[in-house]
Amino acid sequence: MNKLTLTLTLTLAIGAAFLALTASLSAAEVAYRCRWPSPNDRRTLDLSFTGNPLVVMLPGSSLQVTAEADGQAGRIAVIKDGQIIREDAVLNFTAPEKPGAFYISVAAAAGGQNRRGEICVVVPHKASARHSKQGGWLVRVDDRDIGEYRPASSSGAAKVKDNPDSYQPPVWWIRITDMNASFEVSPGVPADDLVAPAEDTGLKHTDVVPVCYPMWTAITALRNGLSARGIPGSALRVISGFRTPAYNRSIGSNAFGRHVYGDAFDFYLNLAGGDNIKAADLNRDGKLDRRDAYPIVAVIEDLQAEGKLPMGGIGVYNTIGGDHEVSLHFDARGHRATWCYITGGPRRSEACWQSRHFANLDREDEDKAVRRAAEEGRSYSRPHREPLNTLPGR
Image (cartoon, rainbow, N blue to C red):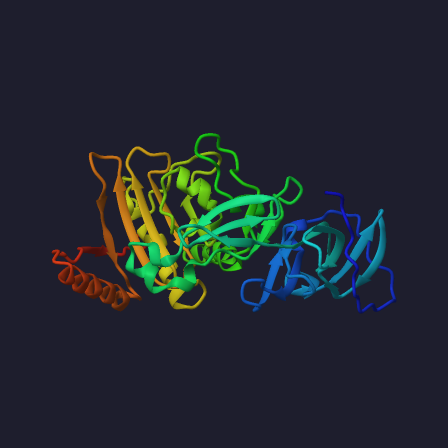
């Protein structure tokens, strides 16, 4: 797509010439701080990007951009054809009505540093949906058939049936292109991480994804939370993000899995760096198993208790002999769900942990399972819950 410059509504303080903006010193120290209403819930997002931001805005909504470094406010300019056409401490502009990606070349000076960059403003496509024969929705975005979203009432899982609002098809969607794949949808989260690669080719299986800031910002919050607790958040590697219902069905996954709603991601921790795909022996017992995921689970639950992560699903996968050995799942479905699967042996087995913050919710779920089993004439054994260990010495 050709680069377009948005029509900017600026409050200009015409005065001193802008500092030399062509330098590229310590770009990571200068952040573009963006404030705008989330397309998901209209709450104000306030994010500081040290990479190039990808900002998703509903048609006609407003965005404010400032520059900062080391806590110091700076100035920001818009550049066209190599020339500064606008500059001020604050840039305010309004998203156009037409869906698509629009690129703004900018430069910033703050804290004695200068930085060139671009802001990709994306106006999302609104999905169209028609009812399927099964009572679900056949979703189409722009010129892409996404697949069928089934009604919650058709699920065999009680929690799905009890939360139908969480299983509606996404409304707003964006397209990932070669031009914006490296732009960040949340600090440290490139757009390229949002789509699950196909298992057979390793390539992205689609180029459109639902808009889901609760998930996108959750990755950033989790990375920050891990680092604050002595686990390098930068080591978090996203394995799988959004899957279309059609692709999800082709790999045999649950039709109601959160990946089809765009609010889930699978990940592992790569402390060895480089292209290493093995998870980290976090508890330092010389083995790679589910207990190495428990310190990360503990951080997720801490952040949920603090209101820094949304409630949702937490899954642990211990795949014996698999690529990652140990990986995790997190989603923003809005209610608690947990699971731990051990695979790679003659059969799959399950494990679970003792929550430090939400034991009452787990107990309520077990009580419901006991009652359902009794009503259906089945037996039910409450699971044994393992200690939710943190890092050694903590």
